[in-house]
Length: 73
Image 1 (spheres, one colour):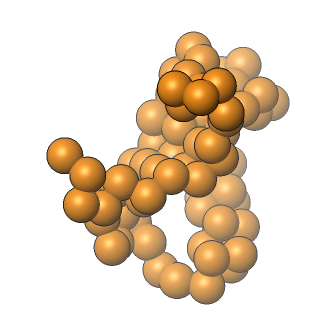
Image 2: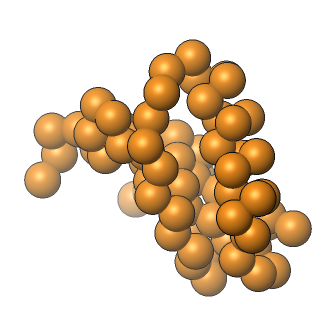
């Protein structure tokens, strides 16, 4: 079960999927989640999967489900 997720757009073609889950997803589960995200976004992206213990909030305490890091060092 996925407890928390965050999508980071790293480049025009790459999304980093940060997941907090009970266990890493199987290749089939990752593939299905990729299909869902691509359908919603309407653009083909490459994916990088990152499993984490938690996803931090921003400096203001807000949780951001999607962040664009293009052009940010």
